[in-house]
Amino acid sequence: MLYSILNAVPGQLCDRAYLPAQDLAQRLRDLRQPLFAVESRRPLQAFDILGFSFCYELGVTNILEMLDLAEIPLLASDRGDQPLNDLAAPPLIFAGGPTATSNPEPYAAFFDFVALGDGEELLPEIGLVVADAKANGLSRSSLLQDLAQVPGVYVPALYGQGPDGTSIVPLEPAAPAKILRLEASIDSMGRSLKPVQVQHWLAEQMGESLRMTGVQRQGLKLLRC
Image 1 (cartoon, rainbow, N blue to C red):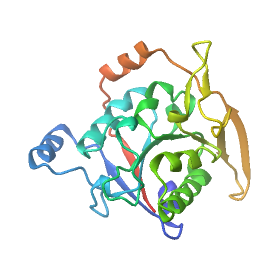
Image 2: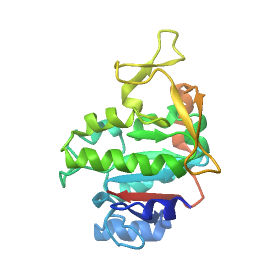
Image 3: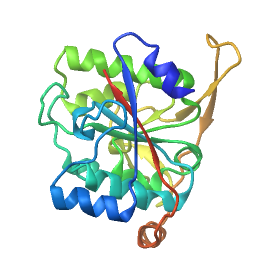
Image 4: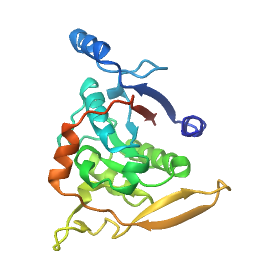
């Protein structure tokens, strides 16, 4: 559904990619061939946004493997601050889905932003914000500040641990104090917003998740504005 919705928006292109099996992944590395999209055959680095459907905790290992195969830095902090219209700029990396919505914090370091809730109405709006930022040559950090104003978008770089050691609080005045989850309504023009508390997990739990291996093929949504 999201694939069709995004491709119906003028000026936006949605493609797909998948995590290859181990033998093909090794072949790509041997050939120094970055992971590419299924339909367009574009390298994943050539897209403006890479969105992962994050449905279970162990899937994070598949996401990291795909980023590595695509030759994209794993950590959001290592992706620089170039505007997206700079060909050297890595894509924005985000996650959506049940795990990303219920508790994104253990994986926050890997994502530029997280889409909370249903993407049917949220993702086209994200695409419009990104397209506007590209047209105006905004830096990556400025673009993320703009995305943080979109209901349903959580930008981890704008938040940090609160004084109680468990809560997540804004680090900048521009960051909303509450992250809202966007729910798709039957009427595509209607919105239902409910607050979602972003929870914090201990670093030890995060490390344990990263030591485990996911087994299901991980889908990827790609958007080029």
